Picture 1 (tube, rainbow, N blue to C red):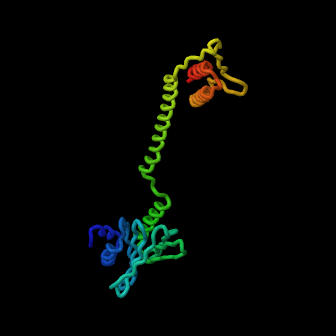
Picture 2 (picture 1 turned 180 degrees about the vertical axis):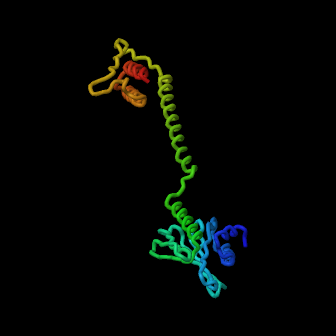
Picture 3 (picture 1 turned 90 degrees about the vertical axis):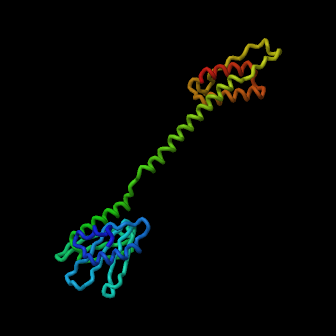
Length: 239
């Protein structure tokens, strides 16, 4: 018998029954599946071949010998199929049972009380894990990291916008006023008009948009260079 299954012989399990089961389990277990506990019937009649229950981290396997113990039937139920598990202690051992979502009731009696309590506890733990999966640290890190990346992008955008405003002021070409307008005084910008907010109340983005609007007016010939220079100077003083 493999060393890994000897631990299931410490609660009055029948060694011969465990040996028969373990010889078959290697072919039955799926990838990543581990045996958590094996319980074996202890019937009053010694000549009767006992049934067994194998609990793994993925399912419950019912093992029933047939043909005088020469062969065995296996029936399994995955944990997501199982609705609830129950234990009823009797005079001669305990009865372990469980119900499925398809209203199937499975029951095995004459399970020694200690073994019945062990499989009941293990089954409850597996069902609890299924209903309340453990959240590892990795997903939390994956959620937090994008937030920091997003903040860095926002900071980069603010820096670029500020740089554009500064460079725009520096590279603004100086245009010599036309002689026909030399006698005119530059029109001083009015900080506010009816219904408009004060320049001191505007954000950098709004001030930058306002400066762009004045530049469009200048390019379209709707305001003079002197007016634009005055608007620009005042707006930049608030940025």
